[in-house]
Image (cartoon, rainbow, N blue to C red):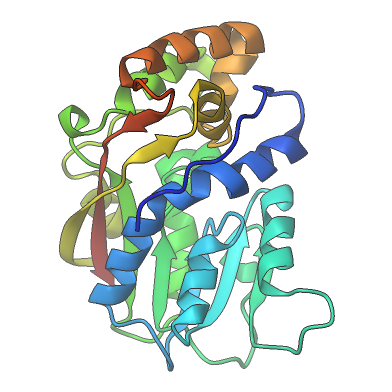
Length: 275
């Protein structure tokens, strides 16, 4: 399933609500091949009780629910979570077991509810404000709510030479103030996911790679989509929004095609660990 191109937008970092909408309408779908590959490999479906860490605006949850899974999601962005509620819990719809919480896994943990059988952390920036330690703590907290032996899926970037988007994200790293940029993008190390799993008390048990191309209708949509990831927030604080947009646009020019669309081949890696 390839990302769907969307219509032209005007770049802006000023409205958090607009950026959340950009994430939902432009950027979130870029990881659909990753979601599909993981769900297919782990045979997610009826009987699966899924907890998604960093669920964003709920697309991955929606796909799991369509396969028959019972889904729960948490995110630290209230605006993205509200969009997830619109998707998964439409007003007037009957209850379907879906739970969404703002913050960490404790926000959806039921005192006597059934344990989760699958945990995912598809967004590499989830809990990034606290660095890898914050994510490890969130994973450990989630694992405490899962059945023994349940899979926990972590996702990250593949090799830089196979990720066209790396050049755009290097703009964020270069413009960020090193003293206040724990959430900025950085390339994934070969063993980052395994080290994170072990720090959370999990046991690595397999991995895979998935092609996740970033496809945009035009440069403007590409800028909006990439800004919505949050990877450029530290750069905007350290410089200014106009400078970030200018340099990001320049970094995207090599991927501009003759018809005006932007196409950036990427590879993501995922790790399956066990509780």
